[in-house]
Length: 109
Image (cartoon, rainbow, N blue to C red; front, side):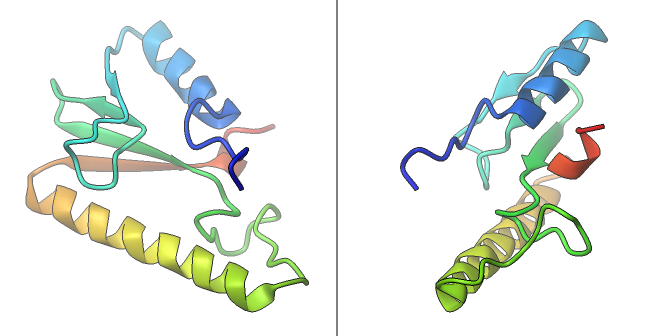
């Protein structure tokens, strides 16, 4: 698990390159905001989360398959991530931020 990347993933880099090419400027992983969003645009008061389908439990997605071994542990882990995502979104909305969630499966051809 220590080798799993939490930032600079392929889908995240793809989104960042697109935004930069379109002229948008942003900050990365602002620790002051709830959920530590992947991309933060203070000018537009918008945050972007680039979620991995497996880690954030994207339902009806080919990349979200619950492992056959240690299933209870994985379900607790993924459900915990989903709960944390919900808390972060709620806190950000309360603070007046716009939230965009981009799923990993939508960034690959």
